Image (cartoon, one colour):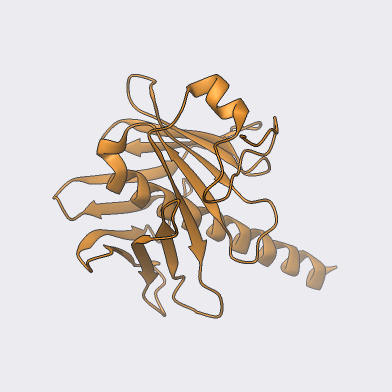
Length: 201
């Protein structure tokens, strides 16, 4: 039976997608899951299927002010490379896929209720809410590509990815890995800002 929550849409591997998701978007073609490895400075992320098989691995170079990150599949074939633009008000990241395609993710400013992240290249966009931990990826025709949900409380920083256009699986995985890095950057900036405010008061 699918999980039921109007706010929180995460589901574990082996569980059916959230019923609100399926009522709104239909049944996904497949679901993948991410889990961050603990006690590593390289931001290792595993992406696995409903049976627990690892399909992709991501890791970042350390130290790296550009947050250089690479993704490989289970056969150790390179899938994508991601970097952060060093100075940008729009929190911009660049992604180069191994097949030669290229795109950028940039966070639109001045959205008070939800986040909007543009994906230049394919013309996709991500809408969501970091507080609600749910994100939807739409293509240029406003058709759903994938729905991404973060587990509310998890030391492994878990995400589930309900995929509606499986032909774009590798691109979706690269986007979700980049999205996680963008969220980490924002959280780090928030912590630094709070620390600075505390020390200055």
